[in-house]
Each structure stands twice: as structure tokens, then as C-alpha cells.
Length: 375
Ligand code: NAD
Ligand code: DAU
Image (cartoon, rainbow, N blue to C red; front, side, top):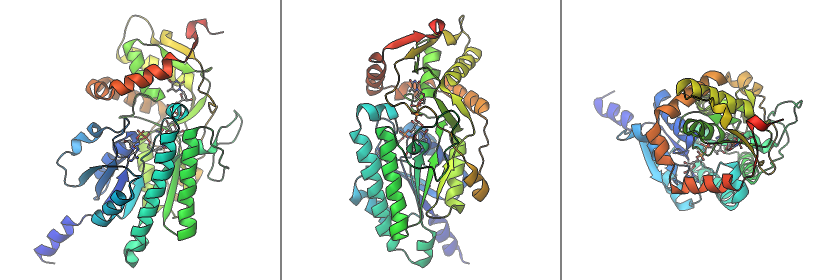
């Protein structure tokens, strides 16, 4: 092999197209992908309120990373990115992702999650059909979805598995279910190599502080009320975000096209237990006179609030050998530390629009009682 061929090889690295890579899970995924593989990343993100280029600041000047600000609902843009960058895979995170916002303003969820996913699938299909044999064989479209599509569980019900019937309860969950059905149809009808992952609640660095864990960490730190919805006994199955990223890499590497894989943390916790654990960690790491648990305030419930989610992740463990590496207690400690150590990141995301959302969501939510007055 002569030197020209070597240069040619190193300048034509494999590339994946990531959508929503400036969001919470997407940015963790982009960072971990670049650390763990020799591929380049093209990140298409609209930078809505939830997208934050600061999450990827360490990639500035990195020739393996390209950022494009744009909308997944724009077919011409999506087609041109496929044409020019020739990805071997699309990893689709972009979405409206917050359940409470979907209750207040559902339209954006249908647009981005349903129409946006359709636009991506369709443009990826047109690109994939034009690939040569080997490239066509290798191409993958990985659709990142959620356990919320399965609806809600009672205390004694078995965990969600891949064959659990869909029963979405919020506009967010319904829009994700719609996108899952489109992904399924593109495999079934066109034999396009689509993979779908349905994951439980993620937590970790870079999560926007409208979601339970970062909101509670920051409110506890600042001595503000900790608004727990309903009786606080709703259960979620928590997964450290790095474990989710590792699972997605594994599905891309070895998952079978047309299949769905459930991903979960084996860490079911009631919300009230998560919030008290956060209070205790913040007390330990930033002590003040009185325990933060006193800030817990039970407020009016989320309408249609799903009682319990739990994931049966046996299929991905059995077929692909993936299991979560992080325990909830150690992952939560790392997460609390991360928020305490990144006050500038926190300050930058708490814009005027963020403050308006917090005011709207919580000011109208009647306080039911504080922890001290609970029966
Ligand atoms: P997020 O809200 O933090 O990030 C979403 C990203 O998508 C943002 O960067 C935003 O700018 C971008 N985006 C939104 N609309 C867009 C559009 N029209 N075009 C291009 N980009 C757009 O979300 P997240 O929590 O990181 O979730 C990522 C994905 O994982 C979502 O599909 C979500 O449904 C799924 N998921 C999330 C969780 C969780 O616990 N957060 C669990 C399971 C599955
Ligand atoms: O299960 C996966 C899903 O997890 C993802 O698909 C969603 O994108 C993600 O946002 C998350 O949805 P949840 O609604 O479960 O997450 P959230 O952090 O909003 O809430 C977690 C639990 O905490 C839920 O039972 C509602 C409750 N909660 C939430 C907030 C914001 C409170 O009690 N108080 C709060 O202020």
C-alpha cells in the first residue's frame, strides 16, 4: 500500500448521522461514540430549548465531529445530509421529550416525534435504496424510543417486555408510539434495516433541569421546595445514561434488523425514595444546618400520571450480552456531584424560557402538603 492510499483511508472514516445529539442522551452518546469507535459523527439538531451545544464543547475543532443546526422535519436538508456525508447508520434521538410539556402543548410532539421521524425514515430509505450491495447490507437506522409506549403497570404486574401491547397514555407517549409504528412499518414493508430500542428513565450529566432528578438536585441545593407529584409512590426504572449509550452501541453492532430491544436499569424506585436519596446526598456534599428533606412538598398530580414503569431487559442481555454496569446509588452520587461541579452549565441552561416553564408548571400546581404534614 502506498502513502496516498493510507491518506485516502484515514480521510474517509466511517460516519454516523445522529439526530438530537445536543440533547441529554444524544450528547452523552456522541461523546461516548467518539471515545469508543473510530467513526465520525454528523449531528443534526434544531437546538430547541432542550438542545445545548455546550454539552459538546470539548469537541470544538475535532475533525471527526460536524454539527448542523436544522430540523428533522425538513426533507431537503435531511436528503442533502445523507447525500453529502453518506452515513452507514442513522441514530435517531431528536424528539420533544418532556411529558408535562406534552400535556400543556401537545402539537410540537406530534410534529417532531411523528412527522420528524417519518421524514427521517423516508429520506433514509431513499438514500439506502441507492446504495451498492455491501453498503446497503451494512446500513442501519436505529430509532431511540421509550418504555412509556407500553402504558402503566400495577404493583404486581410483570415488567414490560418487547411483546407487551402498546397502550400510551400521554401525548408524548402516543407520539413516540406513532413513531415506533412507522419504524416498524419501514422494516416490514420496505425491508429497510430498522432497529428500535425502548428504554426506561435515564439520568446523569447534561440532563435538562425540567426532569425529576436534576430539578430536585438544583432545588435542594438552592433551598427551594421539592415538588413531588401526587403521593410520590409512582415508580420508575432508572438507568444511568452511559449504560443506555453502551446498549445503543451494542444494538448497532449486533442487533437484528426489524427487532425491538427493551433497555432498563433493574432499578425500580418510588419517586419519593429518589427525592429523599437526593436530599441526603446534597446534605452530605453541601451541608447546611437543616436536612433538605424538609423541603419536600407534595403537589397536585400530573394528569394521567402512569403509576409504574419496569423494563424486562432479558432479550438484550440474552441476545446481545448487554447489562447495565452502574448501580442506582453510585450513578445518583455521580450525577449529584456533576451538577454541584458544573454551576456554569446550570446557569446557562436556566434561560428566561426555562424560568417561564417552571413558573407555569409549578405555580398552577396546588400544594397538597409538605412532608412534615403527611399522614
Ligand atoms: P432531550 O429533550 O434532552 O433532547 C432532544 C434533542 O432533540 C434536543 O437537542 C433538541 O434540540 C432536539 N430536537 C428537538 N426537536 C428537533 C427537531 N425538530 N429537529 C432536530 N432536532 C430536534 O431528550 P432526551 O431526554 O435526550 O431523549 C432523547 C431520545 O431518547 C428521545 O427520543 C426520547 O424519547 C428518548 N428517551 C428518553 C428517555 C429519558 O429518560 N430521557 C428515556 C427513554 C427514551
Ligand atoms: O420512561 C422513559 C421516559 O422517562 C422518557 O421517555 C421521557 O422522555 C423522560 O422525560 C422520562 O419521563 P418521566 O415522565 O418518567 O420523567 P420525569 O423526570 O418528568 O418524571 C419522573 C417521575 O417524577 C414521574 O413519575 C413524575 C415525577 N415528577 C416529575 C417532576 C418533573 C415529580 O414528582 N415532580 C416533578 O417536578
